[in-house]
Image 1 (cartoon, rainbow, N blue to C red):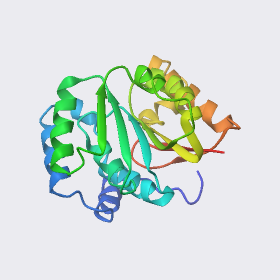
Image 2: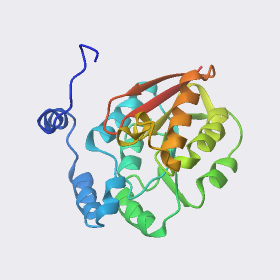
Image 3: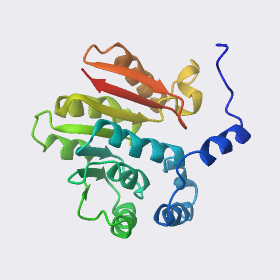
Length: 218
């Protein structure tokens, strides 16, 4: 074990969250409504992930962003709040039910005119876009078996020094368990290996929630 490794116990995790920007009333209400959906609410990103996505957008001066997997909209609001004043976010999801919730909260957050949410297969949406490097920031948090395909479609559309962020890259630690040969786990292992070795990008895996990989296009 590396000597600087710190185990993230519940107490330490609460300390981390307490020192991240707190969700405002819109995000708190969205968290509560999403929790009412039941176990599927686990698909919601963590509070500190949302704060990180907002900060990342500010840091790179993101103007154009794409999100693959919007769910009820917490991550989309977080991303949109980090864009430039004239920034736009294109969201991809396949659920009308979740999209309806997300759109209500986009409006409450004053972001309805800056976020476009398309309910359709994400690959179809991405492939309909010009194959030109105009995207500054992409966030992928959707079906794990398609992560590789999303990566290959998004990368040509990413501008130099733009970034793709993948969620759930540790998959609860299962990617490090050789006995786990489930389809999702194998897909994430393959994605992690690909991105780490891909000369087109410079990538780092960060210990945020279920871990994020950030790949910067060279």
